[in-house]
Length: 428
Figure 1 (cartoon, rainbow, N blue to C red):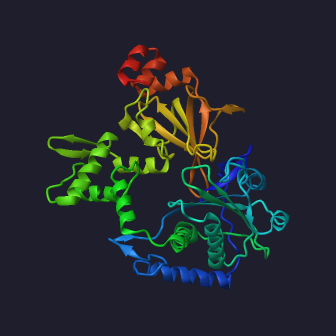
Figure 2: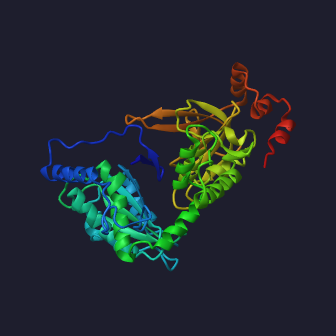
Figure 3: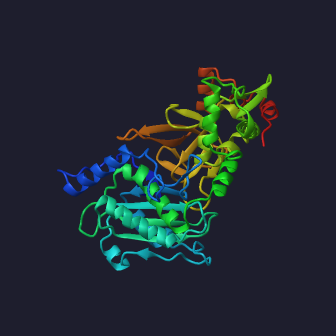
């Protein structure tokens, strides 16, 4: 789960977050914990039923697929914005109008609203799923697993390629208990609930549907199952060994490798394929942020191989903002900043808010072309939150000279061969 503050009508990661722990033991919740532990201990046993890890075809779980995500905030203002604006915003209903709320009595919900609120996103792979039925049954499952009598609202949105449901849960239930959803419920059970409900609606995926999905893996721009096989065949090196692979598997691997080559994640050299450094991490990053590889191919000052996902562990970075992306289209304020560093490297910086830059007490919306420094601050849970500060050219020049940077951006800032910089990088 991500932990947010809500300021200026947008979510921010909360650097002061502390998980609230209930005093004493709740017998009902302790029993549920033991039941979940029991289930996890036997989850590798596969059955032919429709429940968790149900029908298996060709070694693949044949249940319907469904993406499940959850976020929460301790902001009352954020709670109101979600209920009154986001869930029912114009253009999201199936007819292009405002989405309609459903759930517990709306007056009861408003009367008992507290600051804490949870948001759950359900997006089935199949477009044939009844979203209202999915959302209602999902909430019933969640209540049964946690013991809460939840106050909740939901709305179905049809304004994206995959219709989806948004669920909003009040941070206090009908009995006055504070809601705190256990981590194992979020990480495992929620997805399993959703998959089982979708499967009960449409039945298991057919053999042909699974085969089609496997074929799509070959040209996917994210990390897939066949990439695990490629890693295995590399045997700890960067070169893949296909000597003992033949037939259909070899053809599938070659098709995937050619696609990875077009994505600049491997190269064919000396009669074989050699994987690029960090190719798996790049694929996973592109799966999470679908602009990652596109951004890497559009760098102005840095080579594509230099770009990495900024986690904060790289320490303080400085450079020029060459691109700002909206990560999720119009569905959120999640943004990505591409920072090409004075050190010659490029950084893909994801944000859960609109990008802002600070200069003393002033702050404004970040623009492409600005010089900035990115610093991270660690929360009490160990999460690193990036903040951006204006970097003037004089300080940038001092840092370049101090560290002997000689990349294209460094040369441009120093006023050396600025024209050559453009020619060497093939800037867009």
